Structures are given as structure tokens and as C-alpha cells.
Length: 139
Image (cartoon, rainbow, N blue to C red):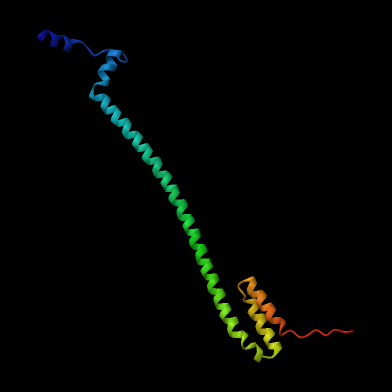
């Protein structure tokens, strides 16, 4: 029995890349270590790539959210401006009948210059027609 152990201990390792070397290497702890390092490297690469993709998606989403928020703010300002203009028009339309037609045209012109929307401009134009001097037709 001692002779077998002695013979096994005195034989050197098998030549590198030989079938004996592969059978020894794949059953050793060195192979498990190499496999663990390879798995860790693959995991690191996949996590890094996924992180870059997620970061890119998040950046695009933040830009999209900022654009949407800006549109909402702009719409709110436009709505507020139109509501303010409409309240001015509403308050003025009842007083127009008591004014001199020339003064009413001046007020409507000023109101038309502050109109926030083409519909409001058209509304002022229609209201101005009632106070415009009548054109005389010559026969």
C-alpha cells in the first residue's frame, strides 16, 4: 500500500492540455474557481449593460416628463390669460351700449390687441361692427 502512494506521489502532473490533464483539471477546485470568476465577470458585464440601458431610458423619460410638464404649464397660462380676457370682455360688453360709438371702438380695439386667441380677435371684430360708422352709399 505504501508503494502505491509513493508511486502516485512521485509521478509528476500530466502534460498540459492532455486528456489526463483535462480530467484532473475539471475535477479540481481550480476549475470551480475559474468557472466562478467567469460567472462573476458575465454577471458584472450584464449588470453594467443593463444599468446603462436603464439610465438611458430614465434620462429619456425625465426629458419627456419635463416636456409634458412644460406643455401643461403653458396650457394653464393660456387658459388663465383667456379667462382673464374673457372676464374683461364680459364686463365690457354690457357697458358698450352706454358709450359713445367712437369710444366703444377704441375700447374694443384695445381689447382686440390683448386677445390671446384668434377666436377672441374674431369676437372683438364682430362686436366692433356694431359700433363702426355706417358707410354711406352714393347713388
